[in-house]
Image (cartoon, rainbow, N blue to C red; front, top):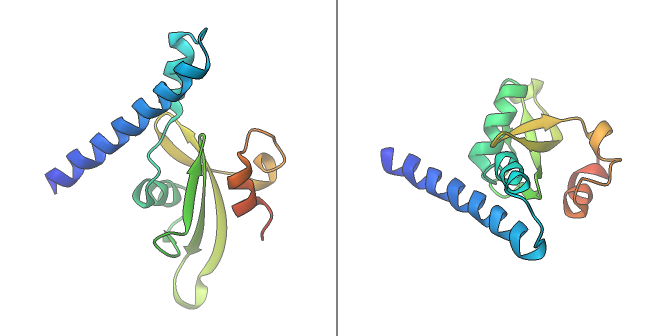
Length: 128
């Protein structure tokens, strides 16, 4: 269990470093403050991280299938099953990274904004 946590932490650290490096070469005038904001907003693109956000927003929510999610530039989507048995329902969720973790956000509010990457919009904003 401890090795899994260490590995998960290393993966999250590598994702943060990759986000920081991605900002630097394309923007020679990038300040350290803007790099820090990128790393602070980054969250691991894992089923576990997204389901954590789902649990904070819904009770008994889970990602429908192992690959029913995706992430890009601080946003993510997941095809979720909320509830269980006859009282469960499917929902397409939109997430935004905030302070190193995901938060479920309103599709109605964010899907109409240009800040949501096209790949995420295509997956979750044009469906019910």
